[in-house]
Structures are given as structure tokens and as C-alpha cells.
Length: 383
Image (cartoon, rainbow, N blue to C red; front, side, top):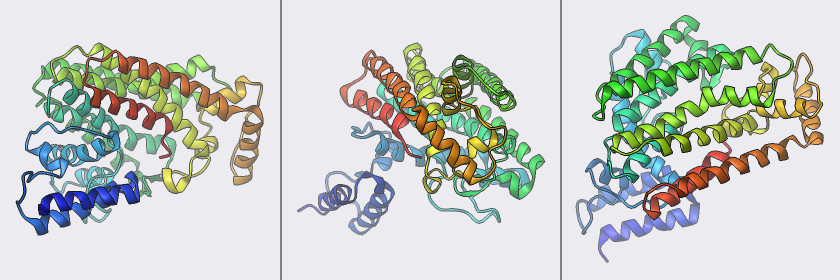
């Protein structure tokens, strides 16, 4: 048997036996196999990321695998834009992006985070025939998102980010704010190299930045209020979260030179689903998986969707939720009020709407299948 084909079959056996959660292990296994095989066989670029780097169009099967393929490409572009200078602010930014330890020691492999928004952008671009033209915009949108997380940690007093100490807990709030500002400038610098009308694209991102800031301010204001209506909540997440998802798919279509409106609408709905699921994980999620403390949103007084639905049903949130017992008591009340089932019903409705929007896109079947999988991932994820 051709040794290259034999190696590929070994990777497939790993995937079947271990499941798709072991994508990173599969990749490492294949790299070892490929290194021992050399450039033999009919296909010297069996590993997808290599084929992407070579500019080839590669058939896709699963959205999670597509995300794993895109991450090293987006990482490479982000690293190029951020640079490697030893300025203290740059060092904080690189730590926050998951590239280094706090002492500056490099971390091998891809950066922290799912890079979901970049993956969406690149998927839209590729599905419409644009290849890798969206890569500068993908880096820009991830740097923009990283800035929002860095600032969010300070405003929310979150001491952990992706299982590590948040940057502000190490270097202080002022330096962390500066690092976030640096990431935003680098996002616009990346977008300036975007081939598809960079001036208009910079305007799109500037408008999105303004919307996200307004949404974040609403989120902060809601923490001081005893009750928030469902419509107010939806307005807040539309600005804070859905805006960036809409921008990601819109920019992917723009990179491919296609009509971006239907993609922006799909992205907006995905963003709503993502935030609703995030709200559920912020209360019921496993801290070992999410990297966030259990019940953290309740302790901070966040008016997340479970809280909004509970109050809407006549429940009352205590003025202070400080202890683990306080959290457990409130979760029991949520169960009695059927909050989780109400959230699932809302998410199911948005999922159905997203699938309708995917069905209206002029893309090949394999891309439509990946988009459907992406809808399920966003709404059903546990991390």
C-alpha cells in the first residue's frame, strides 16, 4: 500500500476510535506520520492546513475540523500584525492572546480561544469562491474580539480567562486597558491590508465597534437594575454580540465579492443564539470546561437570559448572591420555574430560523452542511 495512504488511513482510524474531540491529537499523530513518510504518494499535502497554505480548495466535511484548519492560518496572520517587539504592552497582548506565559515564555501551538468568528468569515469567503482572500479580515475580527474580552475581564472583575489568570490580575488594570487598545489598533491595521475595499471595510468595523461598546454599556447598566425586560435584553445582545457575528459573515462575503446582506442576517441570528447559550453556560456550565466559575453571572448581578426569564415569570432575585449556597438556592428556583426549558425553546426557534437562512444561500451542498453544523455548534456547545 502507498505509505502516504496508509498514514491517512491511520488518522481516520484514530478519528473513528477516539471521536472528533481529539482533533489536535489526530493532527499531531499525522504530523509524526508525515515526517516519517517524506514527500511520497499522490498527495503530498494530505494535512488540510498544508493544502490551505498552498492555496488549494479542499472539500470540507465537518465544521469543527474546518475551524481547526483555519486556526493556524489566522494565528499566523495575527502574529504578523501584532509583532514580536518586547514592549510591555505588546507582551501583555501576546499573553492575553495565548501565545506566551506571563514571563514571556512562548507557548507552542495555536492560541487560546475557538476563533469562531474568524472561522465563520473564512468559511463564507471560501463557500462563495473567494479562497483565502478573507484572511486579513479574519485576523482583524479576532483581534477586535480579543480586545473586548480583555476589557470585559476588567469591567466584570473576572480573574480568569481560558483557565489562566486574566491579564489585569497580573499587570494591573491600566496596563491591561492599554493592551486592549493596542489590539484594537492592530485590528484596524490588519483590515487596512484587506483587498476588498479596505476603506469601506474599516468603516464597517468602526461601526461594529461602536455598536459593541453601546451594548456593553447597556450590560453594565442592567447590573444595577432589579429587572430587565426581554426586549431590553435582546437589544443589548444584538449590539454586544450579534453585531460581531454579523460582521464576520458579512466580511467573508465582501472578500469574495458577493452580496453580503444575507450573510450578515445569518450572522446576526447566530450571534443571538451564541449569547443565549453563553448565558446558559454562565449559570449551568461546567467550570472545568468553560474556564469560568460556576454561577459567576449570578454573583455579579448580570441580567442574563435565565435571570430575565425567571423575573418575567414572577420570580425575585436576591439583592446579593455571594455564596455557593446562594447560587444553589437560586438554581433550584430556576428549575421550579422551568427557566432551562424556556431557554431551550427560544434557542430552538433561532436555530430553525438560521437553518432557513442557510437554505437561502447559493452555496454548494458540502458548505451548506457545514453551515448547518455550525448552527448546531453555536447553540448546543458546552464550552
